[in-house]
Amino acid sequence: MEGMIPKVRKAVFPAAGLGTRFLPATKAQPKEMLPLVDKPLIQYGVEEALHSGIQNIFIVTGRGKTAIEDHFDVSFELEQALEAKNKKDLLAIVRGVSDMINVAYVRQKEALGLGHAVLRASELVGPEPFAVVLSDDVIDAEVPCLRQLLDIYEFFGAPVLALMEVEGDAISAYGVVDAEAVPHNGGDNRLFRIRNLVEKPKPGEAPSKLAIIGRYVLTPEIFHSLDSIGPGSGGEIQLTDGLKHLLRNRPIYGYRFEGRRYDAGDKLGFLKATVEFALNRYDLGAEFREYLKQLSL
Ligand code: G1P
Image (cartoon, rainbow, N blue to C red; front, side):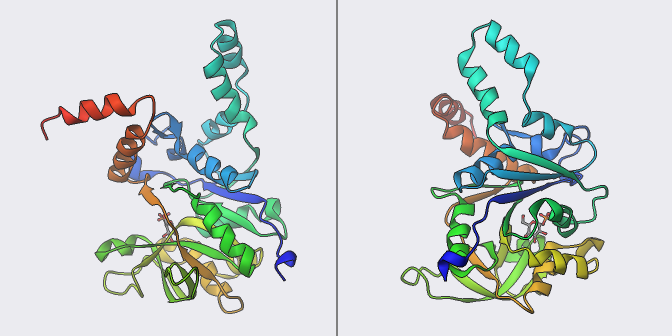
């Protein structure tokens, strides 16, 4: 049975949002290009996909997103200048980014929601399973979060969503699932079978504490579901609603991943990620720690 489950080779990165939570920084620059220390958010997601075994990246862009395309392209002038100055380390970093992936872009002409963005990639993805990565969710994990989901997918051949417990009213900012635990790995209580999904439930109406985080492994039937549903929360075509439609005919699993997630699309989350990532850097951590210690907080 396992041999018949097709491999996931492609990942879709929706990146056409307006980034309103980060204005004015995102007025002329996509939020996906905001740097955590020295790497743009989207590169963290792309590296996670690569480290999970996926090399084909499809980025769904909108207006004003050319910086993303330039970032993953060859920068001829920059490379020449670095070569002339014999800056080998920097040259390797710059080349590494453009050599990293096979990338293709598709345009989402109007920001009509996450489900709509994913649907835009249907021609590129074709009839095969694929991953979706939301680059505002930056996840620091020993085994990349997407790899954890792929391991579950490779067993069941069914869609798998990343889940995380969220306490209190903060759950209303997420897609939330109702789910039953499935025995797995000696009862680690991480694997769930989804019973229902609600996008951005009102406080007190969430079916559980289990929020969807921006990593998905999907099967191509989701495109039909996304095509069939109307606008939902916020008047947008929601991926969560597409999954709810798909659930009528297919099992969907959730996996409470191991690792630490930062909401880098939010100012406070972004600051937390910046501090933690800087502290963990071999070239900056020690000095930065000393600096933080001497702040009288
Ligand atoms: C999106 C999804 C939501 C999910 C969240 C994770 O919401 O619609 O279901 O919980 O990402 O970050 P957004 O954050 O784009 O409003």
